[in-house]
Image (cartoon, rainbow, N blue to C red; front, side, top):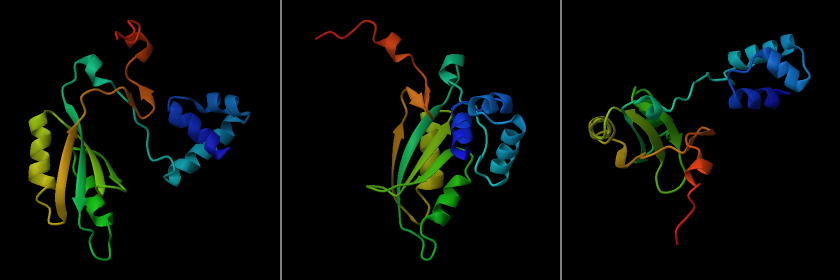
Length: 160
């Protein structure tokens, strides 16, 4: 049942304990108890609302920054990732396999704002060997949520 409750909440954090209990054939009290347990153990790390800021005239940009680093002796990438995570501009930090070591998503007010963040706070760090910044031009799907109606966008078909 653990994964079932978590999957339901991940898909819709607004589901009530009553709705979850009904979906899974459990009592509401059992669901409340399980959710509290997950919160105490940090299995449920938080609840967040995804907002399509483009629809409400929100200004700002999102960027994905690829960062190559020299791991710190005895600490690997943990110390570096912790340092990156402390910046308010940083939305997420991931350890990666492949061509770069760490991926950071950043939200800023403008392209210049993000560029300044990278040049002033990330690039100068002694263990950073290089960065590459990619700006998000349009979100189609984020964290499982569709931002555009792709069927509606393709009604015209394709011209060949």
